[in-house]
Image (cartoon, rainbow, N blue to C red):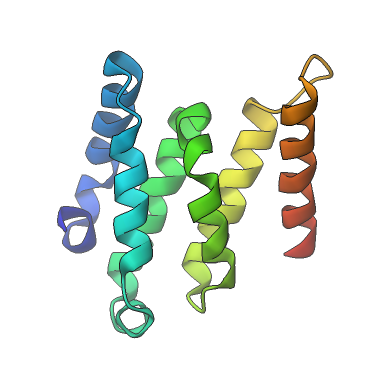
Length: 128
């Protein structure tokens, strides 16, 4: 709720979440936050564009700081590509790009990660 109302908290909250996930191995924090964002009513998204923009900035910032920690939430995030609010769609595309550039790059990837990279690239291409 703090993110929804206070834009200046986006960076500190993103930093805190990444620290919790990396330092303590608690990956459930981000998954729960993504689930909460996904639960927001579509009509509320249209009314509160600044809140949705803050959520989008938060998710992008987390992915830029530590793209590997947001990867387990990709299945939830991809659903945002169908949302009416363009900010969430752009957010997911930025996250996919960050993951491809910083995690799923190179030929040393196993087949599972190569397939994930190809799926991410396909989604990016579909939304150009």
